[in-house]
Amino acid sequence: MSSYDFTPHPEKVPNTQPASSGGPPQPPQRPPKQTAKDLFEPGESGPKIFVADYIVVKDLAEMLDLKPHKVVAELLKLRIFKHADEVIDFATIVMVARNHGFLAEKVF
Image 1 (cartoon, helix red, strand yellow):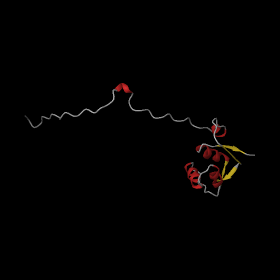
Image 2 (spheres, rainbow, N blue to C red):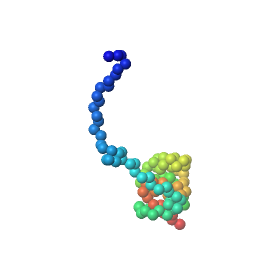
Image 3 (cartoon, rainbow, N blue to C red):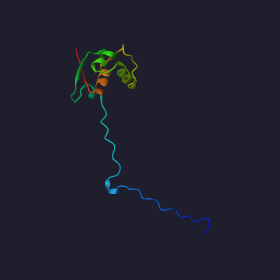
Image 4 (cartoon, one colour):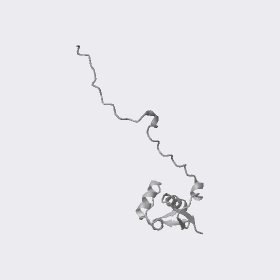
């Protein structure tokens, strides 16, 4: 026997599913992208909040039953730099409210 002969040890065959089982699970489908129209005319129903054109961040947090720092953190994710005592506009209110399952409607 020469020093270059190599015979691997038989390995234990893992228990696997047959190829006909479909393979790994597919990731869930992504929701469709939102447009500006979706933000102002939502097709789904949910709890409504009624707000004016502008609102103080901590007042919005109270309406959404959240701590003000949670709303400030969400605004930072949207690249909007506000603190709890500053006002935000209606378009921003709609985005924050929608992320928490609320529908924001403007009061005149």
